[in-house]
Length: 322
Image 1 (cartoon, one colour):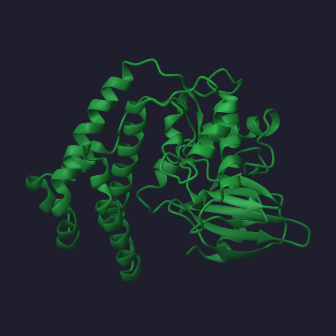
Image 2: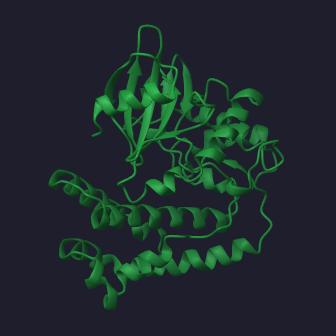
């Protein structure tokens, strides 16, 4: 948890917010979250702690993806369906202190879907959001080179080295090794699989479009009858399977696809792309939790929670073994 007075100082120095109150909110994987308010305005603040190993991954492309979301707000039907960033006094998308990176947004009065299931109507609204987003690609008048999918798996070498028995004693604690060991061969199988799929897709010619790449219920909010998609750190120009992989197992997938195909009539799912994104995401989640346990400073409760999340991900690996 960040010091509240330090947060207030950062906001005063970098934003036109005046005197504000700051209240911690439930954060996500990537960032801490705070509600910021004064007499007239309410904001949502995301704080990425520099001490966390994964922060550089989540923040490296802020100056590339936020201009795209602003363009979408102004030039698509996604207005009121995606969060609105607040620029700093100097017109920048983020500000920094020595220990954190900050993003400020207009506050959304609503509820995160979270542990609840999406209704069929909500799934159809999500299909409309996805269909609109997928209507745009690299042709938009915003620089998107840094967002282009290259089908790389940048964490794979680190994961492979961590699993290597000749090296793991230098990096892995006994308790983490005991969790991973029963799944090590299956993880290696998936690493080989994702490398093969990556090579095939690099030589392919799939249509690429703007994709959110992190669609799950904790990134969806319901506000005044509207479905809102939040947390756009993963925005890419990629095959649309990068988004659709999150929907194919939804019980309302047929309703989703029926709505989606009204806007993209000739779309047919690409099995290689779908499996690539499913396997890459599974391995990425596994590595995220291993990385937290090995390199982040966590108290005992945080470690226990991370271990449980890692075990949950590992138990689901068999779904992707064929």
